[in-house]
Length: 354
Ligand SMILES: Cc1cc2nc3c(=O)[nH]c(=O)nc-3n(C[C@H](O)[C@H](O)[C@H](O)COP(=O)(O)O)c2cc1C
Image (cartoon, rainbow, N blue to C red; front, side, top):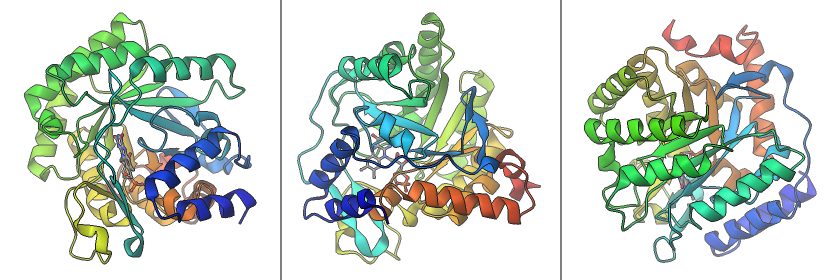
């Protein structure tokens, strides 16, 4: 294990998980991260209209403010989703709001969209594009709404306006469980209005950034299928991120923190989120899916791809395994693709459906 990974893991085990998280992001931002070799060539793929070195990116929530984009890219993530970002700055929920479920290798969070706001984060992304040696990296922005918002549609459109010039994709996040009423926006009529307003804002900005929608694993199969079928017909959604954290508490959980309120992530959400990838792939007629939820190994990454995900994201595995989990998952995935007789990631996408 490298010095950084060893160091990062010690930090991650500090008593207060939120402080540990802040320190880890700051350390990354300060450049205290190793530069890893590029991923195996078999992983080269495409997404968001870009060439990607691998299908594996970093999920929203880890770098909410866009402070560590370049270091995360240097460590082998082929793309990163910053945010969630809300229009105005807001503090989020009272602490504590981040809990490690160590026995389950899982996390529960109820941050509630703590954010520095569009203006600050958009400026950081602009500076990254202008001055970073990795300025060409693939970066998306996860969009949230303010707690006191009375116009969610306007909040998402404002987010698109703020970030469209410098983002490869923006995500309409209607699936975080920690903002009252947010997940109700997954109802068909609400989501249609939001997505159409977001698309109009993107077109007005003359941007080609992809418009993604991120779904909750707690949607019923019937609701998810109908939503995805109807929204696909509008032509306004470029892809789906499947999935966010869950409010469910599987009976298998062993950690004392399992009763905390919030969104559960890591291995306990793997199965449901992978089933939802399968369902969304079908309902969208083979649409573009970014799979997230419990990816912590090549095998879990490979399963998501076979279920229909073209790209992948992880977060919780980094809490337990350190940032070098990215390179490990990539190496294992490359081996599994080769062993499965696939010449590329794309060749394996949705293999389970054939
Ligand atoms: C501490 C924490 C904060 C998160 N914040 C966000 C967020 O702001 N927006 C969002 O869409 N998802 C957020 N997520 C969800 C992740 O992006 C991801 O969808 C989920 O954790 C499943 O992936 P994982 O099992 O690899 O962690 C957060 C997850 C965690 C653990």
